[in-house]
Length: 536
Ligand code: NOJ
Image 1 (tube, rainbow, N blue to C red):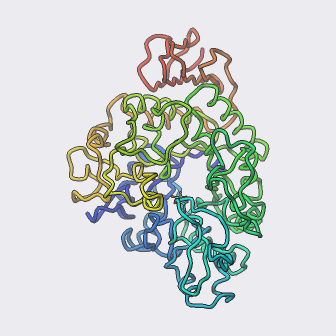
Image 2: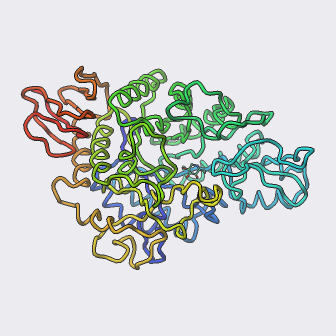
Image 3: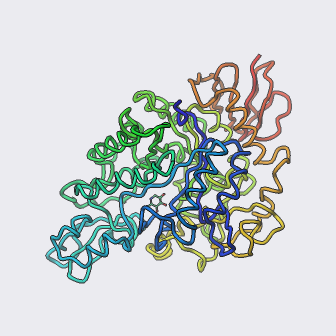
C-alpha cells in the first residue's frame, strides 16, 4: 500500500511542541504525551525536525551525532518509545536527516581540524587554500548571511553554506557516502517510516567551485524562472546518491519513504528528485510561494500536478514550516510582495483577522488537492507568526549573521499553546518557554477550540475526516470553469471552490455545503472563503 501518495503529514518541531520537564524546551516525552492529539486530528504521519545531539547552533540542524538523542530532548529510548507509541495509534514516523553538513562539534570535524591540510580527515569536508590575496577560496555567501568560508588556524578555509557551525561534507568522498547509508539503516532498523532529507539539492557542488555573484537563494519564487543554476545547488550528481538510498529503503518492509527538501525550480527539475528510482516526495515550495490570487494558485496547481504525473509521483502541498512566516500572517501581507524572512516589531504588522481568514481558506483548498499534504504544528490552531518578539529572545543564526537585517525564523517557532489558563499555555509544567509566547496564543489554545464548532481546529478535523471519506488525496481533479478570480475544481461529485475576488461567488443550484472556511449563507461564497460542496 502506497500510504504516502495521499498522506497528511504533520510536522513536529520538537523544541516547541510539548515540554515534559519544565525546562522551557520541548522534548520527545512531550511529543509522546501529545500523540493522542495528532490521532484525534486525523493525520497519517508525523515528521520530526532533528532531535540528535547538537550544540544547537541552528536549532538542531547542526548534528554532532546522527545515532543518538540530545539530552535536551531525552534519550534514545525515548525515540524508540515515540516510534512504538505512534505506530500503536496508526501514525507513521518520519525523521529528519541532515546530510549536507555536520555540526562543527562532530568527531569528524574535530579530527579534520586536528589533521593537516590534504589529510584523509580533511577530505571528508570541503577545505581549500585561500586566494593569493589572502581572501577566501571563492565568492560564495552563506544562506544565513556573511561569507560561506571560515579560516582555520593553519590558514586553510572550510565551506559552510549555512552557519560557521555547519561545515559542508564532501560527497565525493566514499567514506561520507558509506557513513550516511549506515545512518539510514540505523534508523530504519529502529522502525522509522522515512526520512525528510535536509538541503537535498545541496550535497554535490560544481567541481570547480566557481564564483557566484548572485544571491544564494534565487531558486524559487516569482521572477526566478530561467535564472542560471548556482554552482552549489541542484547539481546532477545528487541523483546518484538518492538512487542508492532508495535501494536501501526498498530492502525494508512497509513502504519507507524519502522526502526531499529541495528549493529547486522549475517543477520539472524538482520532479527529477521523485523519479521512480529516487525519492518518494519533494516539498512543493513553489506552491508555498504562490501569491494569493486565483490565477497564480490555479497555475501552480496545474504545473505541480503535471510535473508529478510525468514521473508518476504524487505532488505535495505545503503552506507553512519552521523556516517561513506562518501562513496565517503571510497571507495578510500585500499580495505579490516577496516573502519576508521573518517580520519584526517595526515592520508593518499583518492584519490578524484577514490573515486567519485567508489561512483557513488556503488550508481548506490545500487539503482537497490530490497528493500528500504537510501541516506544520500549530497551523491547525490558526497560530500567527510572532511578529513582535523582543530582539534579546532571538536565536536564529540568520539574525546574528545579517547583523539584524533579517529577523529570521524564530517567529514561526514559538511553543504551542495547549491550555489557555495554564503556565506557558500548557506547553510544559512550568512558565518557561524558550521563546516568549504572544498573548493571542491564549485565545488560540487547543482547549479553547476543541469541540467548538467553527474553530480552526474543528475545521481541520472535519477537513481531514471528509478528505479521507471522499478519497480526496487520490485521483484527478477537473477544473470547473467560472469567474476569473475563483478557483474551482471537482473530484467525483465534490466541488471545491475558493473565492479570491471582491464579490461573492455563486455555488451551482442544488449544491450542498459540506464544509466551509467561514459561514456561508445560501449559495453565495464570500471573499477569501473556500467551500466543499456536494453536487446534485
Ligand atoms: C533547512 C532546514 O529546514 C533549516 O531549518 C535549516 O536551517 C537548513 N536546512 C540548514 O540545515
